[in-house]
Image (cartoon, rainbow, N blue to C red; front, side, top):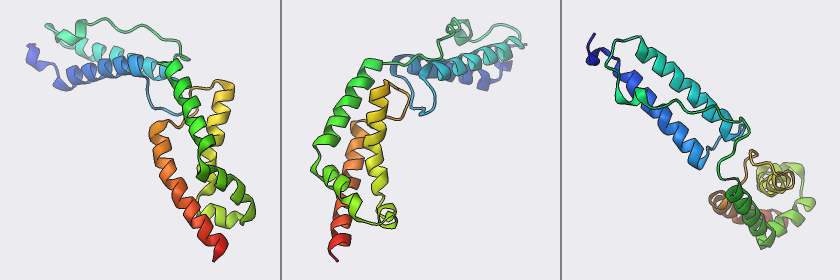
Length: 170
């Protein structure tokens, strides 16, 4: 069997798995349910699988095949934990200092549950609550709003406040 008989997909998939593993190791992932270590081990299993598929062909194997299989990783591994903690604390501070957010926290007590639901106020307030809980438990897996999320939620916050004022006064 010649080199060209190796399904190109196996070689490409193997390279993609190594790339994903490297990315998770250095930058972490965005899975809100699992630590980076879980996803790294999943990619490691994919690497083992695609290497085995390549072994079903005759040599020469593609160059990527000879790269060492990554080690098994602690399932609780989190990439850049200090950066996550720092960003979480900064995001919480932004919420605490935001006048619109403070207004919503007070105003939600004066409207019906239906109005709050229609205005998505609990979603906005939930960002801060989730963040506070995650920080207090040092839980780096709970989806922690970062600056990008805060900017999006800040726009929603202004819209909610406008709608809130409108509902309260008309």
